[in-house]
Amino acid sequence: MRSPDPAQLADQLRGVLEPVVHGAGLEIDAVEVRSAGRRHSVKLVVDLPESSPETGIDLDVIARLSRSAAAELDPHEHLIEGSYTLEVTSPGIDRPLTEPRHWRRAYLRLARLTLTDGSVVDARVGRLDGDTVAVAVPGRKSPERRDIPLAEIRHAQVQVEFKPAPPAETALLDPDALSGSTDGADGAPTNHDGPDGPDGPDGPEGTARDEENR
Image (cartoon, rainbow, N blue to C red; front, top):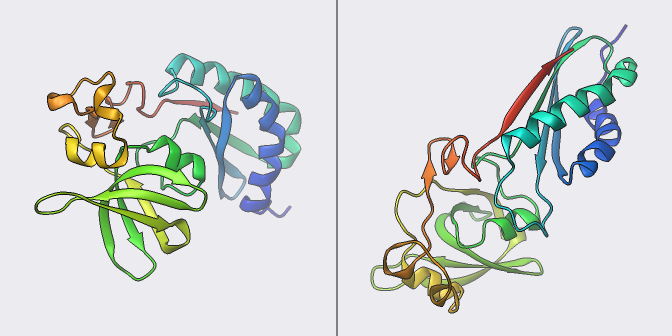
């Protein structure tokens, strides 16, 4: 029997898993399927709703969702046609910014933007206004604000930072940011990024992951 097309199978599994993920108070960011003969790897990437005040998903939540998702897939094994491994994970810092909600979550984070003209810009992400994002581009004397249409951004990815965001960049994008509650030097917000994402592998914004073999 011919193995199912991975892209088509991913779409089918998204429909199966969506109610379970929503029931856990989360959203599906991506469903990825990789196949080798009759063995399949299903990766379910989940994220917090845009309205959530939280900054990351707790590992216990991921573990519970992993069990629930595996139980939901069991009656639909005919879709997968073979043994499979289910991995449930939250997005890592290496997730490209491809959706408007990704940009909103990256607010005041440093990102590397590859533009359609081939140029590469390191810039701090500001507000998303429709199809345009405001960014602060570092300069020799002071940062420059630019408004870049999303259509002109080929690829964008948040960068790891080990020091506080420069106050001038933050103030350029949000003049009220420095007057609020902050934890960085000179009143600038601090990004505690490590090699596995902000706050390390198990921190509030790090990648949480759980795996089930079926």
